[in-house]
Length: 213
Image (spheres, rainbow, N blue to C red):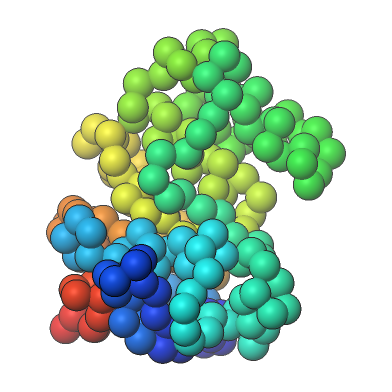
């Protein structure tokens, strides 16, 4: 397998609090990497540093041999869910996806319709996003993360707000994406999600990242 991501001794502090303490991790294509830990353990900060949203204090992050903040400023070809994604509340779900998609591509409504169906949303629904349930918003968040067929997915608690059927749908989707060769980093509080989906599991504790099992 080809290594896609290499995190080498990455550190990050906020004032006197060290949140990441020389964290290292290598990720290969076609695998799902689970990151677990209590709230405040540093999972989200690690994901933000990986994506380029935060600058590290030390260490380096490489993607296919090229270094973040040296060769590029944001993680390339990556779909992201970190915290609650922001959508334009007064527009429908498909309209939100179309506007995001057109930043880098031509308009492709059929593709957006197919993506919405992939995550279990009705593309013909005219309901504004402000009227969506939490679970529907989460499905839409997954749709925006995968709609450009990105090679890397960084997913921080992607199952939040989903009912049992929604969780089953997302598990099937993530396993299918893994089978397509995607590299997925996945944080979840749900032990079953981690056990069913992840090839390797790591725990964040005290700013350190250690492999579990």
